[in-house]
Image 1 (cartoon, rainbow, N blue to C red):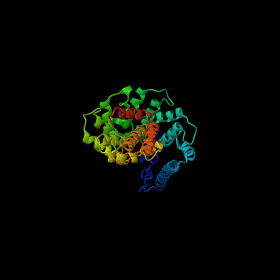
Image 2 (image 1 turned 135 degrees about the vertical axis):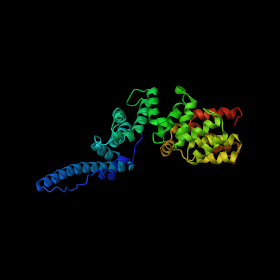
Image 3 (image 1 turned 120 degrees about the vertical axis):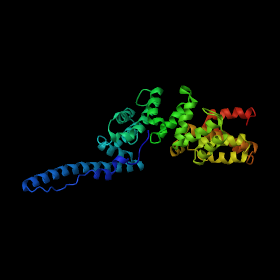
Image 4 (image 1 turned 120 degrees about the horizontal axis):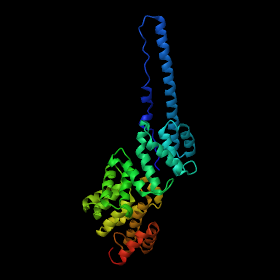
Length: 343
């Protein structure tokens, strides 16, 4: 699930303090009357100050919690969030994520789902800014069957809520996820996949930019457009997306730009920690592994045949092995193409 590590707009102390009423003295001449009025106003102001001080206390606790999260101090953050969860929806949201993923506590996905449902079903204006994220997380829970019975249909419904027809203020992650969902056999609809990847890409999602490049390249869900494909793949490659890098390596190799293919393939295969790269780029590790496997195989081919680089049989064997380790299916597919003389 997705953690939020910044205080949102409704927590601003300026907004809270601005709600304090100013005590204006009356010009009544009756001494007793005037004293009564001032006493009432002071009493009202005192009650308001208590509310404000309590709110400020919650903000300070939440600020400390978010700082603890950013430093990886999950147990400390968990304790603090528990203290304010009944008065702060953001604290409730963070707790939901932490229980679902087991951050600072034992995994309890059912409890995580419960908190997300509370946010999604709440009528409070203070929960509105968290609803898209909560819907995305609930969709993930249903898709994975974690904390609830698995249901692709319910996951799709929740992700559509979270995506909000491409609204840039909604969950861009849900928009990209829908693009992937509609590319899969179970709900395959490449036009829908293209629509959602386009929306996510417009809203800054790197993974969808790479996916769009591939869809343009092969005419999936849209007409083939080599120029648009290269534009998307190159941009995603520059931003560090290994899935895009793998496909761009293939494009260069099949176009006989061997030096470019070998150079880019070396960069794409430089780091073996796919899970770390997935977290850094907010991309699915499966797709990154596929891209890295493609790059490794084509680099092995360049090294074996001396295309774009010096021949090196030993290094070629190492990269062939690396491709098999990263994604055996991709490596097997490319090996067959090589044996048939296609690459």
